[in-house]
Image 1 (cartoon, rainbow, N blue to C red):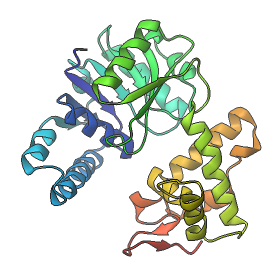
Image 2 (cartoon, rainbow, N blue to C red):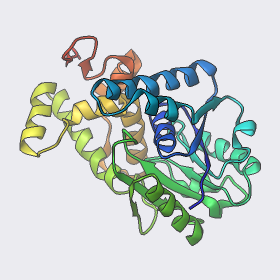
Image 3 (cartoon, helix red, strand yellow):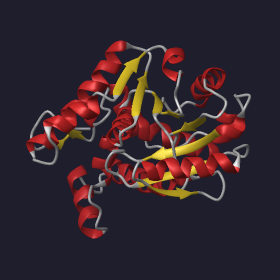
Image 4 (cartoon, helix red, strand yellow):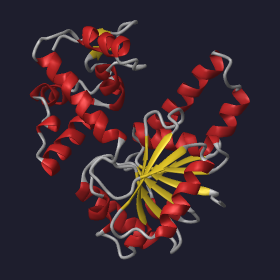
Length: 294
């Protein structure tokens, strides 16, 4: 599959990680966001992460420079989309915002360019309804961190053309991923939907005082053989991202398994967003991190 340039819309944790993944596979990545400081922060984070791997002997300085040379940034969507072969959107989990972004991308991107969304909870069919060529819209969900996690879930909207599905599957394989294509669209797909209920229950167990954050994470690592505890994982994903996902699932499905705990809303209001903010269920200003008083 001849993909030479990919536009990644949104320079948050997932967007910057996807851009790094694309660049690591020898493809030019253009990272787009609203503000220069966000973009520069994303570049710094990507480079810092790779330099840690250099320190561990897993990468060389030359490899870091080579990968960084393939990542460019801009606030101008129109300039960025020129010459792109594939687009991946990773903005906030807000269907109206995504519809607005896709409407603009649809008008700017070449006819054969696939418009993929990394959404975990928004309806892909709703997003596709905002464009003139909905057959080229598809869900392509990477897992955090994108450079490490092998799974990419590919989910067609009602309007998605079979050719779009196959081309997206092939691109995922080019990136070294193992794609799982869902039979049909369903809120949050497979892994994220199952995981959302598990993570949500962990927050409720904490809120009810059944165990401390450390107790809950240790129990799940030792008892369920999970590499990371559920509260640690929410901190990695982002408390705000997890809250948005559960709110969407609860709204769409009406299932109590996804009813978000009020503790999550308090944490978001306080700015306790997880690792990216330095504090979530754990306080990352200390090494090793300690549970936050909640």
